Image (cartoon, rainbow, N blue to C red; front, top):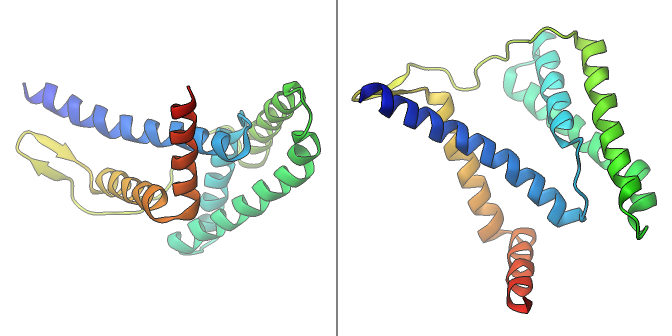
Length: 176
């Protein structure tokens, strides 16, 4: 039973992370109307930037903020240069091809720049593993799930963008 409970908690933690990744794809689609097949590689590239900044001696939190800034500029440039010129086209196939091509380019560029060996990213939250009876949970996993849930709550309950996305969904549901 102890193994079952541990697997259940681990599954819930991983499920929350996969759900956050899926939600990011949905949010980009809802905001732009485009399925971005390169979104995972863009996140991976940003993580490599954070790792590289930290490897150069930048404190971890500043390295993550720097990588977020680089990701923002890269995403904005990608949207302006590659996506926007074709966004008004009635045919979505060029956008699919562009995002698939960008996925391949970013994946290959990351391998060329940082190598194909996996890199160890330092723990953002360190501390002992929390033990709740027979179940052990790392503090980092718990903090990630709580922070992501809190940020999503704030996005959908307290921001104009999140409220507009919710209204848009409600309007579509009523029309059906």
